[in-house]
Length: 583
Image (cartoon, rainbow, N blue to C red; front, side):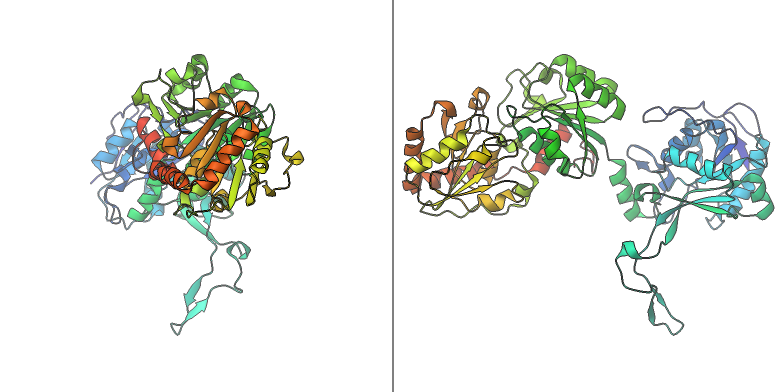
């Protein structure tokens, strides 16, 4: 069968026809790098043994071939990209992208890529290529190579490299078989992988050389050779279904921007929830943003392995979103405005907001409100109730609630990260007035300004700060005194009855702090006197039946709650429920 070449510009080379005009990338529009002396060859056979029809197979909603073509189109013009194929469908897919097509007879797949490059060189010269031009070979089985890498490969050749080859660091403790067939170590000493000498594996993503040198030497590998290192995603070369599963995982990753503020009045709960969200969604590209004012949010978030950016108010955050171009924006900053959310929804971005009673909740794609429902938002755009609470990741591995004990031997005092109403002092005074003789564990949050001056009133009290594993501490206690934040849900997951005092009017509206969930709520803490609180403590210490009932309710109401399940429901509501996209 005679080779034929197709040309998207309308010029003919042999028995060629005009292909479709150049189409834009499916993602964000990229400007070509204007590499006028660079040609790109993409060999794409129709057959495949390990993964049938893989070059035309849909990955992340588009044919595998298109991934590498999109990267190529971000670097050079379509008329300088040539897909070499023996297949009608791949021919049509290439034409849809506006690139050139060179047809070959059906092959067995035994020809080397050097052979294909040599044959294709003649077509490139017919298209106007010169011997000094650069030829880069890109394989569609390496779908995650970026346009910038193509530019780096071309630059290496411009700077004197004879060839450029993409590689991945592949150092491991290895073995080989000796002449006698016995295993022999392929290393000098057993050390950690990072301490081994560098060992590189060709990825196949990009190999480049000069066209004239290829014709003269018959190979694309010519000295001096420049190795171009790739990260794991770019280095992936799809050969079988195992590789395809990894590719699907990578292809479904998104860019997610989470805004969570913290402060003495606002508290630390929003920042803690942002961390829990980030950990559950960590396979995606996560950026955490927090208000610069107060710096409490930054002090907490920067301790963890996520990118953290401080912003000066909502306008600055809108500018950050325009710069980062996220697929999803999560707002955990309480009440937002419609104008703010609308500005963030530019470019068809999804916006999910938490605990939002502002007008922005009416515009957001989804509202998550585990503490109090927004009655103005339709049910199909809202996830409410304790089953939609996002908790610290350490509670996700909790398998059993705390054991029930007839006597109260230990009480926990925890009033959030900042305790703006100074309820910790009141709780300690009430415990002393109740003559509680057991252990008292006090958690002082990072924003609690009174933590250093606590009067323990002679109690057997221990003050904790920077607790690394909260469930371990919760399981040591029989009763907790707490405000009406998300810590209550964490306590309920551990089966701990809670005596609650609210920090402010907003906490009075939190629906989870109720007897239905295992909580006795005394209302606004500033209105509860020490003697009233002491009387409730004494009652709960002596009424083991009441505590057991509260414990059973707590366990019942939280038994099906899980961060992964909440994330799954969020993704389903915003239309991201494809396999592998939910966390």
